[in-house]
Length: 420
Image (cartoon, rainbow, N blue to C red; front, side, top):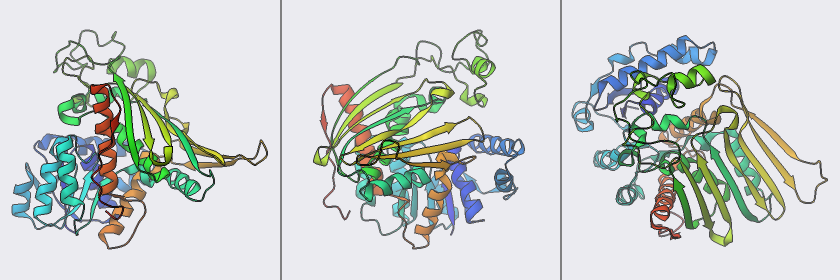
């Protein structure tokens, strides 16, 4: 393979390191408008490796010590003019995805597209039309698909352990939610909404477990914690309130030992440009009358972190908890419990899935290996199709539209048949 990485932030670096781990030497060029982003992201990674006692991280740290010397370009077209590649990982700002996909299709490349597909209705439909019958590999990166607990939940429902599905109650309480408001993700212009950044994963997980098509969506949202009238370029470092403000990166590190981000991610969370909601609630009706409630909130402490849901059928109930046992560090275990209607009260299928030291609940590596399988011409049930990314993005856009228009939105999915 000859691979290019477009977008040199955390996602782009994650793809670069995964290629280096599982297909060494395949990445031949990187592109981003700002070279400093690549340098800083790589430097932060090296520091995290040096400070880790995890043998797995140490192994990653031995990969190509000259990554800084990879050919670097400030735009995709310039990269393609100098290098012949067959695969591109598109990890640029979400608002640029449609443009990057158009270029990749024009050059007949395999496409690994970071989620969400795009952040506007027009761009989502544009990408779908370009890729729905694309002859090359095209995937959307939903890393939680590869988590072992996700795969187990899918199997329990597919095997009929819950009987006919009735309803789902799903929650995502984000313990690092302030991070979305300290960097580029805090404006609608760049991300659309936190539905498209966060809920898109959860909608995809719910869709993959139910295996039903969503039909109608109603949503509510508000901004209760973040945003305000502070200057947009104010950093915690220069703020006179940095040792008093409850949302200061310094106070949160001092009081709660929370992650202390690099300087470019220590922007004031009360900036005037912040225009995205920090809590949202959604009701989704699927075909056959299956109803789903979903909520996400971005201001909870570590101990209140919650992600997962209760799936109720007429023959049993399944509790899926990604943060079953959690410490913000090397320990993490997801729980899955299945209670059957005609079993004794204490009879339960109880599973523990250890994801210690692995990102996205142990889904990142499995998901990446699935992408490599597709690139080799093999089949996999883990890697997401463009259709799945399209449906999730359309759900996110419909939810935001419901908030803005105050009404139930019928999902207009441009799917001619289930083979697409």
